[in-house]
Image (cartoon, rainbow, N blue to C red; front, top):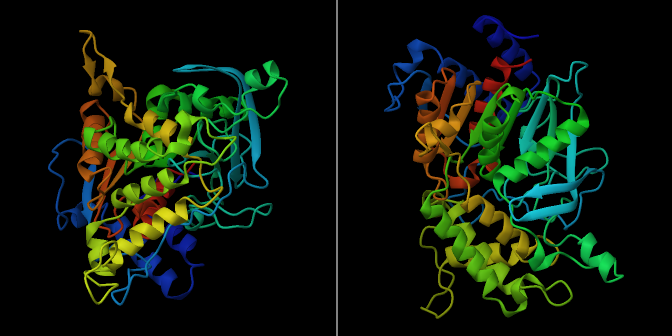
Length: 463
């Protein structure tokens, strides 16, 4: 039932949170209630305002009030980490959608396969669906299922009473086009090559066509057509997923009721392109890469290992590393190779990521290339590219979240998104700026700050 009054909203919120137990449950209740209070005019007087004077809500959530449930240890290198232990291929129990002759920027996929998973129940009117967009290296397994009980990459955010409340919403998570977790990508079998060579096991490799973020979104909406879902309650995503959520709202404004974009942008910045180009160069410099055609030989594991090390520097934050590692030494004497705990940590991340079967190096190259080319710009009436023109169709309620310690997508980019939407006439824009330690990975690790903001916003816009 849609809530029309804040008092009803607050009552429902407290009921939904009443089942939380223990210290963590109390923390969630305190922070969610406070974030609700911050939306009142009286409370906003005590919050540092956004520099924008346009319509909408904008405020900062300081670390002391929206802190993380698992703060990094000050005693050593231990701290919360993102789990990347999926094997390549579709997760157990995932569903498969096939679309023939799907056009992408670089050509045609004669048989495109999209893998997805769902949680919750689709309403009779099919009006409670939430599309959760993946980050670059995520699979469709955002949350555990009966068929696949292993925890997903957004496990603490999906379920009864959580940020994406499955008592209210039917959540759909789609593995990205170009990935290696079941959806068609460079490591997938090329039906054209296989039929012409009488071999059923020839991957695309270097012949996989380039694609755009817009192509990824269109593949997701082809799935929605297949499922008979004409209109989403919300489009939600972080990082690449946040770019996709904005893109979806721009391309299909009549099919989306609400949009949530976390740690993303409206147009890729040169700094982000430079970071990702370094990762691609690490892979392509590995002799085993073989211009992308390595599937019948050893993979470019060393290149992927170095690429992950470079990526880790952009995914986390200096303040976190200062707290977790500081200048803690691993050696008593100065050595060539490794002297500090932070060096050991970066190497560990690279080794963990490059383990056999975790992620396909070509998927890193193809998807990151699509991310670099992303922009919502469209030509205005004078024939000039305009960001305002590109977001003009996004008039549905929007929640934009940035993180002050994010290196890959600095918070000014999310602030820019909010300002662009307001300048284009959107009167329902809410902007949060979080002071979290975890940098870009905040959207994966900080369930109180991110989950709290999405949860409060989700209840206020529930179907």
